[in-house]
Image 1 (cartoon, rainbow, N blue to C red):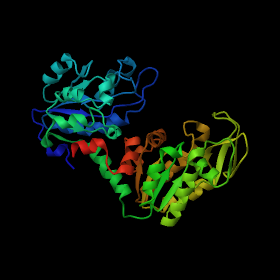
Image 2: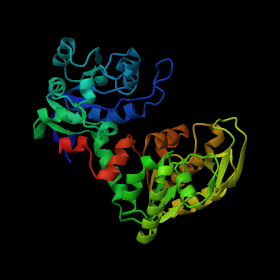
Image 3: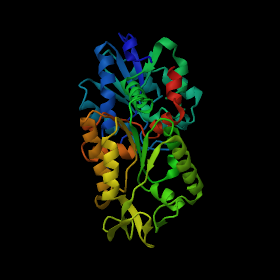
Length: 396
């Protein structure tokens, strides 16, 4: 794997694709700067070794139009919190002014380009657009794992304009690849995967791939009820993908043949409406009354999950156990997070990946108490499923 440590940055401009697609509140203030903090070691290494930096990223979904709500100008102060060097800003990523700014950069300085997705050409992987943005740097670095599964102009096509000695991975990309491989290719057993979230359809390929190496797969979140329904349980008004019932049964049968222990929750917190102030009660997950919906796992389920997690050598967690955004239904996800912290203390390797799982671990301020927190959601799932990503292949 070729990383920044294999390149001489003295008096060179590094064009870095970062993932600064962060959440903003109504006042356009960053609410979670995890992705910005993750990129800082890469930036510091290049500056320390005599280079200058041109940063490019997307923010939100402006759909090819200039929308100041999604301007990267909003995050400049957040970058400055972690790196004390001059940071210039180009109000357009390929304007004459942008190229004037990049060409005049001095060693130790940073230029942040405006949102790439103000141009449709970015998501379309346009070759002309990629050629233009390539002219900002002497060296291309992909450090945006969260977008490495997209064959966009700035994540894959741009790499074609740099020779093999002038493109590499930054620390974020390198660490993601190393840590995800450490989990999914592990020979340390037991290996437990915790898979949650709302829809089975989002995780079909991932679960199928995990069957090859996992000893246990713990299922939680809304996707649980598709399995319960397929097995003949009463799920009330709970979320269910009726077109995936046969797949659920097929997967359970395949797991049994492979000796993989798939564990479904046994009890659940149900509510009479999808709201934090709903009336709630607990019940057996196979007997949810009509008019009620399951929104979190409960004590018996958590006890059985905890026992398996603490007996594991490697744990991968992707997806919440319930509607953790609502305080009334956050406990299942919270308990799983604390179980992972305890497992980490006991020597297990714990990997947290996926947007909601990361949001949960951050919500409970536990991000520094597990082994590794992935910056990519869809990218991590696709990497598990396919074994590589377009952004990785472009550098290779």
